[in-house]
Image (tube, rainbow, N blue to C red; front, top):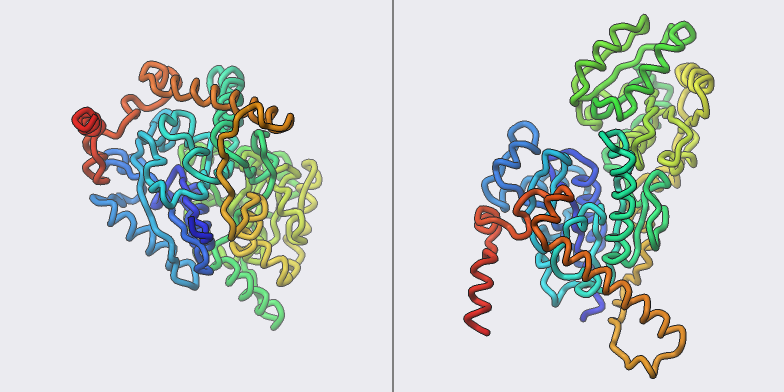
Length: 475
């Protein structure tokens, strides 16, 4: 294999679904390929039209993968100052209404030819592997890196029998990440602890937000009024995204925060309830539909209030800091990365929240230094990723060769024993994930062991029945 490394980034969502696992892997692919010294392939899910209608907003639908690829490329090209040079491939996916997630169909490792299989980056490795039935990742790729985006345990604990489900899910996540990944990167300590894992924020912000921050700095330095509005919050309008905590704090301290005006931006299942709760307050709390955080409307706000503790690393917090705003947020593992920035004001209790908010309304933000601005960038995030993943950027890792047990030193025999146990664990997982009854009992979308005829036609795949027939004829 050439010393030029090939990165295959597999993720669980794609634009136009504006979710973190669609956006951040896209930026990662663009910046890994930026210098031209690496080959990068972004592997994203392809959905049938029926599923697209359930997932993609504003009736953004695609008849062909090429149309979808064009949309994704156009989106990223509008947000970076260079021409992205990565390739895009699609794997067949199905949308699960129960999980509100896209799940892989069939063996998605087949998307990458064996001759270029080098480094696999699994965005949400537990999600990609719960029902994985196919080639073992570690056998196909020299290095398999998982990046954990989501605290699934926190989500399921809020459901019926949540504690029982969370206990099972914790074991399942540990199991599949151990057997299929060499290294796990957790974006923050708010995620589940997993084998062979490190904590490192390997995400950056859209460069457009950094440009806004530079503009605000120039306005402040020239004596102009850089901010004309006070405080705001933006996020999907569901109670679990910080709205409950924020409205409870505003309700409890209405008298102390009498002069505060807060604008809330979001769209979601709980929009009507949030609006009604806001109307019950004597404070001026305005609720608006969701917008892109890059909208010029947000440039004028000085204070971003984010009391959410359900995020792993809050993208909007990073974006607000990049725009030069003061951020008020809770002392929580998800905010650990942001503590290095002077404009991030951390509160430990309700009284501190009130005081920090009042202070922020009276103060001007501290100017970001060049180094602080760099730490928020995707260039820095890419460097952190390469380091955290223990990837040699030039020399591929050697593959493991079989050696007779008697000729191995003691420490290698111990390693071989561990490998044998892992092989047995993989065999068990493959056996369970290969049974339709087991898959359905554990929540998989029915009949997703192999892509159906429609997905095969869309992606130019050979249906499983025809492959079996061909194999029998050539055997």
